[in-house]
Length: 119
Image 1 (cartoon, helix red, strand yellow):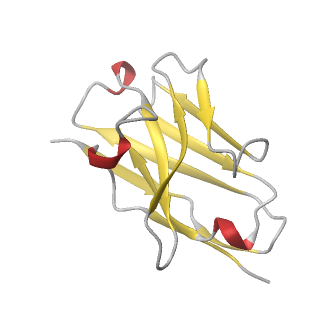
Image 2 (cartoon, one colour):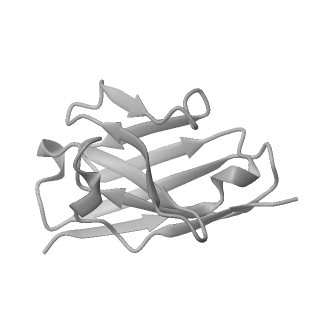
Image 3 (cartoon, one colour):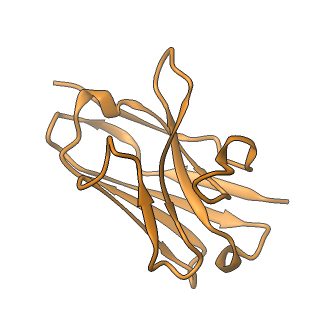
């Protein structure tokens, strides 16, 4: 059974940083592209970032490019999202998904971790 468990969310002031983690189990993590997706209150899901299996190729939505960094540790079966210079528009429930940048809509995902940016 595919399991994805996100952690690291919380409340932070504008300009702050958070690091999200996603612990994967139930599948061979190292052979799958992975992504982060978010959903803000009252809005549909939005793709945020993806990383290829080897970890060297990454993709970002324009809204987070230059502020967020996706990474993975295949030895630990863990996906990360370092988020810097957070703003109120980043407030959302963040999910990790077992997918690349174009298949995330129907991909397996976790329960999410809440990120709230507020002064």
